Length: 193
Image (cartoon, rainbow, N blue to C red; front, side, top):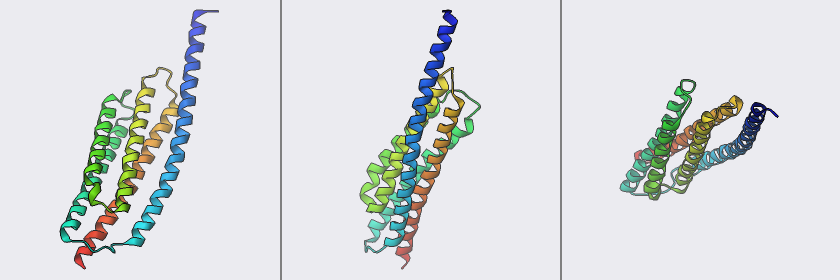
């Protein structure tokens, strides 16, 4: 058999295996996103139902407001890094620098969560924890995009699915961020009454 044909068959086989693995992981991620969306809705309902029924000191409220502000900012940084990466899509073929920035944003969100956790109520902590977990998924997705961009036999459909997944996760971060904002507004409103 001709060497070029063997090389072509091996390359095609490798491309097929990579595509199948990406398809399987994308389906799993999509299923997880649907579950996360349901959980966000449940948390939004619980948060609105509970309101601000606790009596706490002004210093505790101020500390919790600052904690919420910092977590919202850390989530925004992650969203900004995703947006920057998406703006560069099509203009470059490698995303190593973006992966580094996503990792830095994820680490920042993790650090913020650890520092601010004591000042959050259980619903807020749960929302922040979901954002932290989503940051891990985002990092993994960006890593997959980076790896796929390095392959010569790049499957555009698989790459597009990962970009779409990244966009969906950015939207979900916005939902989580809005839940935290709503909680912050409720806390500020409780100071006025």
